[in-house]
Amino acid sequence: NMFRILKVSCDFARGLRCACPAELAIGPGDYCVFDADKVPEYGEVLAAPVCEPVEAPQNLPVVLRRATLQDQSRASENALMARSARRTCEAKAAHLKMQMRMVLVRYSLDRSRLTVFFTADGYVDFRQFVQEVAAELRTRVEMRQIGARDAAGMIGGYAPCGRQICCSTWLKEFDNVHIKMAKTQGLSLNPAAINGMCGRLKCCLRFEHECYLELGRDMPAEGAVVDSPAGRGRVVSRSLLRRKVRVALESNSALDFDAGDVRIARSGGTGEE
Image 1 (cartoon, helix red, strand yellow):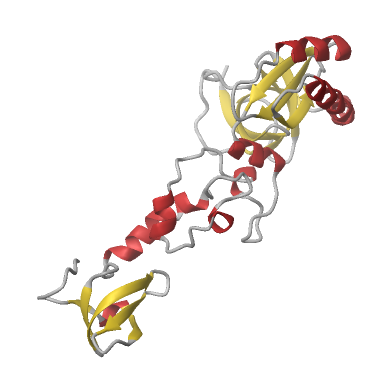
Image 2 (tube, one colour):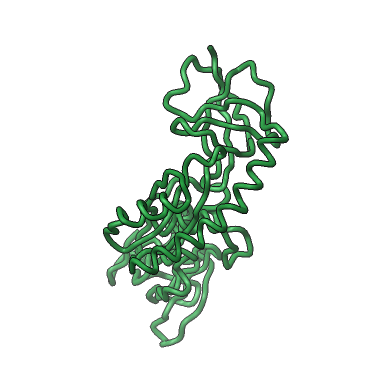
């Protein structure tokens, strides 16, 4: 059989890559049932990337069928039952004094498995918790510890830019983000300004970093001695997006100049290209 690749959104993942039989008529906006680790799950098809059909699903979840009205009704029931299950889980965790924060409690489509997504600072012994919850709810319980960024993506929210946070919409892979990136972009190092909702450095620092590096390559560095229309001075700050530099002149005044109007001094100082 031949398969094509679909991107499916469900409550625990957005943009999940799934293999779909090539002959199945399904597309963006349709709801589907897919097999994830031998358990049926319910989701919405987001996109069908244009690519050649493949012969094997390559360990991807496999779309079983378009969702029926019964599937949609079951998914709605599961959402309601999951709220009750969460209250049970929170009560058990409090009783056992478990140091963790629950992010999402959800049922698989057939309610054969209850998955608890949580964050914690260290190791959590949840064996007794799983036994008690499984006995009370009469289902298999699976625990999944996730990172702060994954948790923010599940919860969602709006960033200071006014848009939905990237990790809950399009960003699926988290690259390392360093404090040097904030320095390169001339941002305040105040955690309130450079940290996202997850409490970690904002992911946008990473995917904007190369742009700032490119903009800064043909501008004099901070501390460079330059010749400006008003005389020789030293660069004290740069505005990469505005393409301007502030120069402290030998006359003890500081003026802003367009980057193209200043040149590295050929002698004296410690300027660099």
